[in-house]
Length: 133
Image (cartoon, rainbow, N blue to C red; front, side):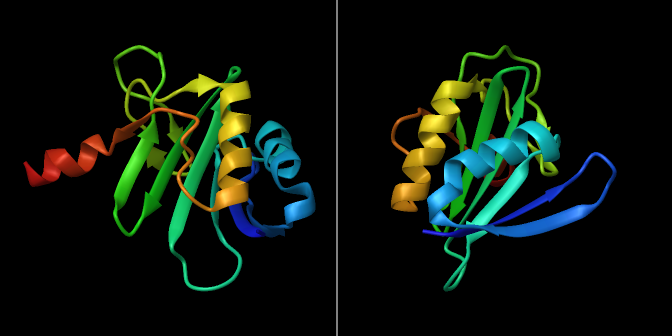
């Protein structure tokens, strides 16, 4: 499965590229490590958009936000209270960051299945419940 990746560079340039299946996870990690300090947004490269994944990394920890027609979920990790990071202009909640190795595993699973990875724990979007409740 190929995907489209969008991100903003440190210089403020907006970049978009297609990442092919043969180099998918390695290329996504390379983008996160060297080109996209503010995170990346991943969408399908063919067909109608059925999902979107926002991914970011800082200091050896990463976070994911997976959105599809059923809702939004954030990775669940051990980071402390007090608000989470902002990646690709998405505010992440507390307790969202996971070790890089787990992030890599989740990206591999996502790129293989096109679905929300089950190798990480998820928390429902706390911002949607605050609006509706």
